[in-house]
Length: 356
Ligand SMILES: [Zn+2]
Image (cartoon, rainbow, N blue to C red; front, side, top):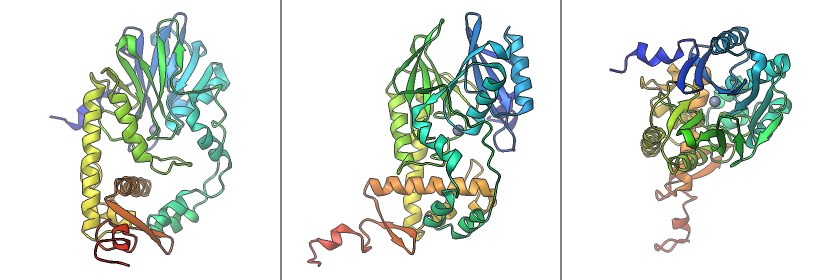
């Protein structure tokens, strides 16, 4: 059985050896949805290289220092922070530790625009996105919310990683592979010689990664994500070293499950439109969420927003595949069946029935 205790076993603090010279170090996260993020420490001669940096928190820094000490290193021994993407739980502590202890930070070049937006954006783009998605009340609430901008740990990396480059370490060579979807600039680090994939949040063993939760977002983040899954599925199989959850033996097996999940989700999204839901907000309300099958209003606000965006991403893919069409009515995007007589249906404009 997949018990609740088992699901959390991977969060246990420590430096857990997952391969010769590679240790998984879970660090705490604030909030109560996701409890920990894995940092991978790769021993590399007298230095150590970290995959991801964690969320900049005093307790996370202390735990990282203690865990590294257990395998013979100090924070000042970190030569490189190879960060999979720009989310706070991966990037900010790398920047904080670089400031205090040295080391170099690298992240995918596809994150450039997002880092710039973090520093400059005045009105959160979710205000407009939620409105388009039909979540007008949430949009209004967000517009009235004034958070403080904290730019302390959003400095530039030392290096922007391009797709396909090799990062040569003393003990191995890591290949950078761009995997847009979770974020536009997400990268994974592939170690083909040791059959290991440092997957960041691209492939997670227990949960389905969120799609396009970022300030700058491409037009169809789910399409990008599905393409990135297929891209990694086409490589030889490898052990999965994820940023959240335990290490598992097969990247391929988990990708197959994720592809199946999204196939079912696309079907359910399509069925919800068939059932009369026409905006992303209404469709999200017709679907169930999390593995506990919860309804949209039962989620906290942050997760409601994620759910609505995720629904929008699925609706977009259905439009791209020609199953649905969309039209904007009073600033809100309405979806309907491609063949159900909606005014935007091209078959009606030039159809065999003689119209126009
Ligand atoms: Zn993430």
